Structures are given as structure tokens and as C-alpha cells.
Image (tube, rainbow, N blue to C red; front, side, top):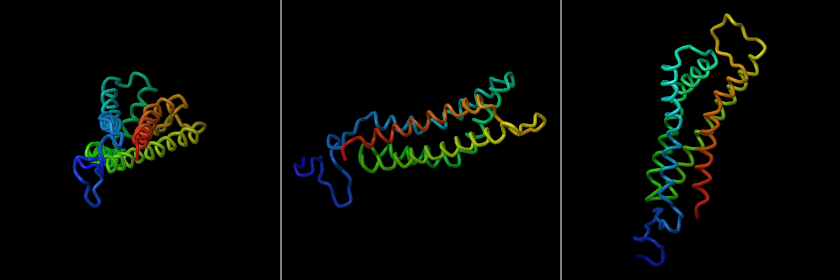
Amino acid sequence: MSELHGTDAPAGPGIDNPSRHDTGWHPRDAAWVTWVALLPILLLILSVLAAAVEGNRWPLIDDVVLTWLFAGFVGLVVFVPAILVSLFGATALKRRFRFGRRLASIGSAAVVLVVAVLAYNIVADTVALAGQHDPSSSELSFSPLAACVVLIPYVAIAALNGYVIVRLWRRAL
């Protein structure tokens, strides 16, 4: 063991290889990053199952589930790259903590930004269409209650991604 570097093997140029003790790496870090990264996919799967079970019984729930499905399928275009970056970061945490932390943080931050844009659009549409809803139109418009219900899982996803970023960066540099 090299006494100078505190690692099992000497670090070469450009190699980010501090000992795990020096970085404060914990095995749960990779698990947190992985599970939080997969939350948008989990929400999509649960939305598909809810749509199959619900079957147009309650209009409020139907609108909420349809919005989750639409946001989930359209959001795959932006969520999947961010999820992949986070997952690559999670796998890199054990061997190259600093590099993995950067990747996981970029992926989590991207998810937070996507969720923020989605939440803004839902709130803006709800406010704009609140007084002008035409019952004969096929356009989705939410009551404030439905908009809040739609936003609950996305706020949770954003909060957990923020937690992952804070958790990773509170470790020793």
C-alpha cells in the first residue's frame, strides 16, 4: 500500500483513485443513485398499471393517470439519457468515486430540471385554462386538485434527486 497516496495502488496521471476511506464512499451511495435514477421509469410502469385497473371509473383519477402516462412516454426522450448518466455514475462510484459522483450528479440535476419544466407547464396550463375550460373539448384541463395530484410524484422525484446530489457531495473531496 502506498503511504503517499493512501491507495492500494499508486495513482497515475489523470487517474482518480483515492482510497474509499478518504472519499467517504459508502456502498449505499450506489444503491441510492440507482433507485432514485429509476423512479421516472417506475412511475411510468405504475401509471400503465393504474390505467389498466382504473378503467374510466373516476374522471379525476383518469385525468391524472393519463397525464402521468403522457408525461412518462414523452418524457422518456429526456429522462432516459439522464437516467443512463446517473446509472453510469452509480457503477463508477466504487472504483472512481469522484468521477462517479460527477456523473451521478449531472444525471440527477438533469432529472430535476426536466421535472421543474414539467411542473411549470402543468401549473401554467392549470392556471391559464382554469376559467376557460370548454366541457365539449377533448383537451385535458385540470382542476387545481388534479394538478396537485399529478405533481406529487414529480415533486418527490425532484426532491430525492436533490437529496442524492447533496448526499454525494457531502463526502470528503
